[in-house]
Image: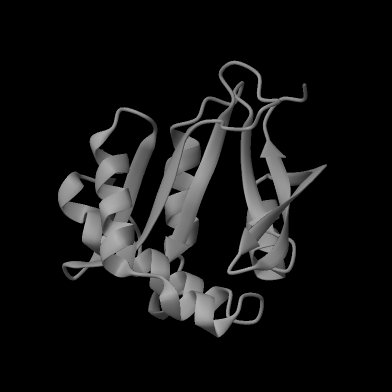
Length: 175
């Protein structure tokens, strides 16, 4: 898959060679987006090499799809999606596992282009879910613009000994 966007960004399927660049974007984005929610000590402890190994394993597996957005030879962001991991998921339900951008790419339409590319791959009859931090109001707005709505399900995740509420958003046919 390769898509060229209006803003000179190329979106393509990720390969295992992208693992380090994806890990770098992943951690840079977390540090920029979640510094008001998560302790600095936790964000500082995140290791690019360890995350790159996790991405290497994910990209080498047959589970899910990952796409990257690039411009001028630089990875600006990525999105990863596949079968839902929710215990209450029905067969065929998909989940957006992650969509992150380098903070330098925020506000340039790259996330919109990534989301549109993901959604173009999802038939309208398929339900898709994602989890977002309750305190990430900017992300809530972004997901709502793309047809996702909170479905009332919440969970508590622990990041660096800090309990954080995540909200599930869904898109697609009702159950």
